[in-house]
Structures are given as structure tokens and as C-alpha cells.
Amino acid sequence: MSDARFAPGAVRLAGLAARLLGWRPAEFWAATPAELACVLAPPAADGSPLSRSDLNRMMERENDRPG
Image (cartoon, rainbow, N blue to C red; front, side, top):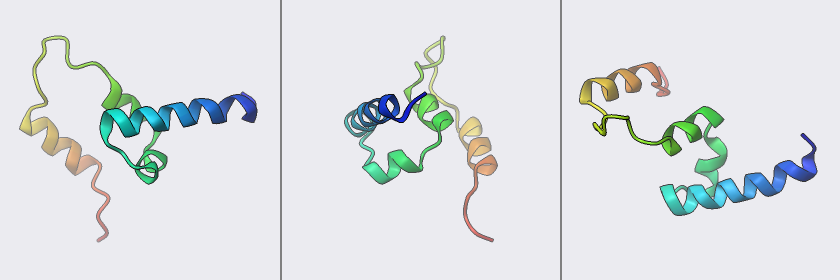
């Protein structure tokens, strides 16, 4: 992909993230493509919310606190 096509797409995604997610530009640029896809993915097929145990597992796995 050329730089000429990447930049406009990135600007559009940053704008969508700002409107839909309340992310500031730094939060958008710090997110990985997988994180962005995850938060923009449709909800679970059964409509159930994320369980507390799933959230705890994700927090443990993605712990980025020092020490």
C-alpha cells in the first residue's frame, strides 16, 4: 500500500474513533490494529455483555503496568 492511500484512511479511522469511542488522537495512535478491530467489532452473537471473568482475564493478560 502506498503512503498516498494510507494517510487518508488513517485520518478517517482516527475521526471515527474520536466520534464513536471518545478517543483522542494519542489514544488512537497508541492502539494496535487488533485493539481497534476489537472495540469496533459487533457485539456477541447472543447479545450478551462481556462477563466480569472475561474482563479480569483480559486485564491480567494485557497488564502493562510496570513491575
